[in-house]
Structure formats: structure tokens, C-alpha cells
Image (cartoon, rainbow, N blue to C red):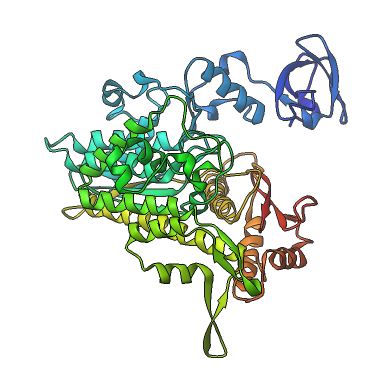
Length: 559
């Protein structure tokens, strides 16, 4: 915003785009006459005269500062100036821009081969940050040199909304570290395994969403370990928040995890028969969406790449086939249907899919059937069994499949870690955190709540380091500066995790009551937090609640 004193006649400014369908866009204009305390009159480039309050108008930077490499050099740094600078650079194919030590990347949605060539890696090797054009290699080089010279481990946070390019950015960082940490010896075993682990995890942990054809549905922290000479000698991968619900439920227009489709397209006819598999249209867990393929993606070729990655990680043929059996069992289990039984119980309406599941997993048919139709409960020191109705039996089926898939995914991560672990003592590491961006879908469940909670914590960390600590240092050193207002999200976090009867506490409490359900959880949340300014009760979602996150409002559905 601008003060009236700075808005003199002829001042070049940015004004809000005066059309309701574009409330967050800005267009250039010029001040017609000196502003009053309450009003400023401007003329747009198409000769329209408009009036605004001074706090709605932002002064433009001079033309010489358009498209700068580092936006901290801008005379005026505000939302329209940042957006304009990024747009100018993007139109020139400069997808990277600095803001101090922060690198902003805009996804070009196309591969720029010259940007990530071996020659480009060599160009940034040994160069201080800011000497060359903004690039993700400069961030990687800066962290590598800091680790070597300061003898301290480093971490890089890759953040952004779905489709922003986090997964590709992480792969590019790993490519650079592999080049830096492997160049002093001929053998490339560790580096190759680290690089190949990423596409392998993508096959089992990535999926097509409405916003992104290759969206990571889990978070990961990759710790690249180096010895005293700066050579990679191992790595460790930690994963977070795998979206288990995607295994059993997908929106139309999306896909399940890539591996399901790769398997059905990539296996031979005899292998499909051996695994009791049919086309994707045969399976409930896949046909909830009409989308079974991705444009310009060959699932059969991707499956071959997945198998090659498995071989590099030294997953044996027997282990690979066991994983395929689990995937086949999940697909068949999704076809198990239930009918109504006596006294609000349920029965299995089609035995054949269950029989196939038991053959694939080597399970006892009677025990598996029993686990789907009944639930063991404890009360008063005694354990008894309760029959499940159709809805609860379906939930039990889905929970079983989610558990199977998440257990397999966890095993895969452990298997990768066992093969890329350091063979000798590491001096330090560079960590790369790649986690979901802020998410807001048509229906937002517990998983979106966890993802957005994690992003709230990351935002707080960002605020703490970029604003609070820096400003405290300025005060301590008595530097002349202007205080920066920023959105402190502590109160939103208190609502989730700290206040008496916070959201997590209420959720934990409700999960322990035998008669608690979706409705009772929603009612209790509203009862305790209806007066909180970061909490709202939505009108159109009876079992829902709304949280005002730093990035915007999100309506969560407890059902």
C-alpha cells in the first residue's frame, strides 16, 4: 500500500484489476492528481479514470528494475511488483528468481534440456550464489560449499502448491549432488542408487490428480551423506503422510497410484493370469474414475523403468513378484461386495474375489472373512465380537487394503535405505525436504488436514527465520529499517494443537468413544471453537468445519 504523500501527480502505480472475476490481478496506471487521505484518482493505459483509496494502490518500480535476478534489489517490493517481475522473467524463459537466499521457481510445464545439462552443472560448480543467473544449481552449490567449509550439515526445503514442480526440483537437486559427490571416484554405485530411488518411489507414491499428472502423494526427507572429502557415501530416506485413502477412493479425473496401471499394462499375458488380473475396468478401486491413462505417458514403458530401478536397488525377482501379488490382492479385495444380514449384520455377496485374495496372500479364507464381518471389542475387562453392518464392513475392507499398501510402501522405503546406507562414517549431510504443498479440494478429509497442518508449521518456521530473527538482529545492531508486517499464523496453530480442547485433542478423544461418529466429532468441534476467529461452521457441509489457514479457508469434511 502507499501513503497519500507519495502518490503525487504522474506517479506510476499498480491498481487492483477492476473486474470481479479477477480480484487478485493488477494493472498499471498513473496518478492524475495528488492523492487525498481518502482517495486517489488514476488513469489506466486504456484511458479509464478510476478512484481508489491510497492503501489499494502500489507504486511501480522504474523500468530499469523490471525483470531483476534478485527481488530484494527492487525499490518497491510488494505483491504486484513481485508478480510483475516474475512474469517478465518467465516470458523470457527465466523460470528462476532470487529473493535473497530464497529461490522462486515457476513451473514451465515443459522440459528445458539446456537448463540442466552437464555443462550447466560445471558452470555453477565452485561459483558463489548470485554470481551467475538464478538457478536451482546455485542453491545446491551454496549448500554443498557451506557444508564443506563450515563443517555443518545443511537442509533445503522444497515447498509449493500441487503442480508447482517440487518433485522435479528435488530430482534436479539430487542430480547435482550426485555430480558433486561422485566426481572424485570412478565407481557410481551409491549415486546411481540414490537417483534411481526417486522414480521407484514415484511409481508407488505418485498419482495423477486434477492439478498434476505426477503428484507426490507423500512427503519425503532425503538425507544425502558425505564423507570428509565431499564424496557421497550413502543416503537415508524418510517418508511422511502417504495418502492411503487414494488406494480405495479416487475422484473422477484422477488416478490411483501409478504402479496399479503400470502393472496391468506391463505384465505379460501369462503373468496376468498367474496374478489373477484383468483390465483396469474390472476393478472398483480403479473404475471410480474414467481416467485410466495419462497423455504422453506410456505405462508399459514406465513399468520397465520401475523394474530396472528395482534391480538397481537389488530387489530380487521373488520380492518383486511378492509386491505384485499384494497389488493384485488389493485390486481383487476392492471387488468384494456386501449384503445385508440379520440384526443389522452383513454378509459377503460375492465370494469369488475374496477367494482370489486368499490365494494371492496365502490367507485363511474363514479368518479373512471373519475379520471383514466382525469386530472385536473390549469392555469391562471382557472381549466380545460385534457384527458389522454393510457400511462398516466396507470400511473394514478398505482399511485392510490401505494397511496392506502402506505396509508395502514402508517396506519398500526400508529396502531402499538398506541399499543406499552409508558404508563408512559420514562427516555431514545435505537434507532435501519435499512435502505436499497446501491443498484444497472439493472434499477435504483428514489427510488434507494433516498436510495443511504440516504446511502451517513450515510457514511458521519460515516466518521465524526470515522475519522474526532478522528483525530482532536489526534491532540488536540498531540498524535503521522499516518494520515488516507479516502474517503470523501462531493463533491458527494454537487452534489445531495447543488450546485446551484443541482440534487434535478432540479428535483423539472422540476416537476412543465407542458410540462416537462423524456427526459427534463435528458437533464437538463447533461447540468448543465456534467463537475462534480461525474457525467457522460451513453452511453447506453438515459434518464439516472450516479453518482459516495462512493460505486461505479450507472446509474439512469429517465424514
